[in-house]
Image (spheres, rainbow, N blue to C red):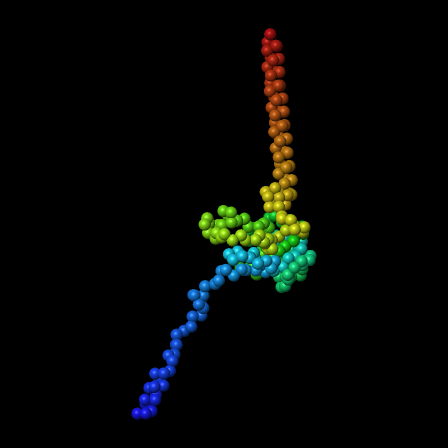
Length: 223
């Protein structure tokens, strides 16, 4: 009886065992502290809470445009300005994807300063010609993502520029300059149409004048 009573005493004095599964999400349901400022990896600029950093470029290089289609542009790498192209280069050539079909603003044989980032969906690098325009003054939906915190303006490094760093012209007239054959054809067609119109006016005038003279002579001969 003495042994049994000692056993019961030890069991009564032992602390209860917590056999519950610990919460892997952490305290407060795993919520993140949004008050912690972010740091832009490219410029090392500290961003206030609520601001987002632009996408980082994997590499920036000078490249001569060899060929292009609606989505893909092939460049000959002339000089790597920053980062590393790694296995994306094949025999000095590299393909860059333009998801918004902006290759129409690029001209074969021209040199460009290309800031390219890794694609999340394809096995190529990708870039763009123009910055994305914000809707409704920065909010895609009115009342969404509004913040009283002023966010610093940081240039997007994933973009294709002229060698001097200027933006590429994406206006309608630039498309005509890129397609010189079409431009010359349109001008030549306009000149031909104008000449035909003028010749038609002259011929019509001569016909009317000839008809009037013939009628006048006919009346004089009858008299």
